[in-house]
Length: 300
Image (tube, rainbow, N blue to C red; front, side):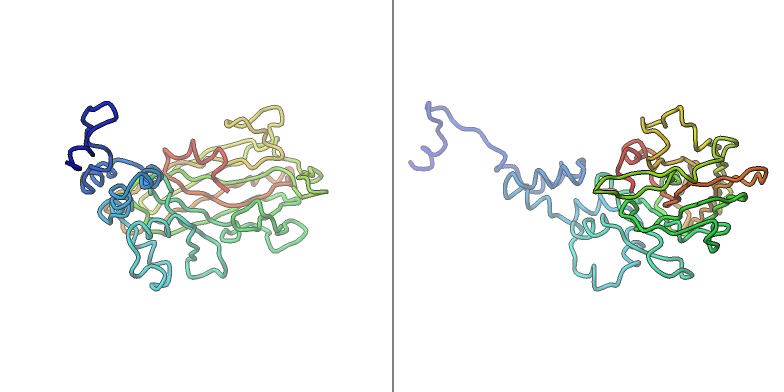
């Protein structure tokens, strides 16, 4: 009798199955088609959804094929005995690594929280910068505006050249490489951000050439005038006083490649004029179809 009454509504109608009646394995099948943030939001609905949202079979599909290579960058005790969900959460935070020849945190890799795809950033300190050791030309500036907390500031130079490279087991994907640059020297004054353009000159005379190449002979290049003060960049920001991401090009990683070497550079080596007043922060490598979302403020 009690069971019969419990299935009746207030008006005597029969109440049909609810979300709580869906089997956990069916919920898990649906979760295979959702993003990690969507899964985490739905996990709050009931016990079946919560159980499916913790399933290793679900989170295995959200991890890239090379996720073990990312785990290998960390001590084993950090990821041993973790569920796949916890591994995804761990890899979604920046993982510092180096190429064996540098000291300090100069490169970071992480998974995009929505797609689970591999992203990377490389500090200016990991690059070869002409004249970097001569304080007449360059200085290192500490700042919270960089994920590496330090940027290279150019006061003045005639031969401007920055080169870098990275070797990494990238997951199969199409990637875009950006340089993150800032015209002018910025600082905080009375709690407000201010920019000084005392040294900013020479970038409107001739463009800077950006190039990339890979170990399987892919190549790309772009030229940009860094100081077109009358224009905004493609994302609505004025170039002076703002961080701008300059696209160098794209490269494709196939599933057959174990290690991909990427070489990148920017240069303006016309010595008929000097140039200065530029901050060099880092290089970003992200999946190409994420760049619209990323370059609007997520990259830092």
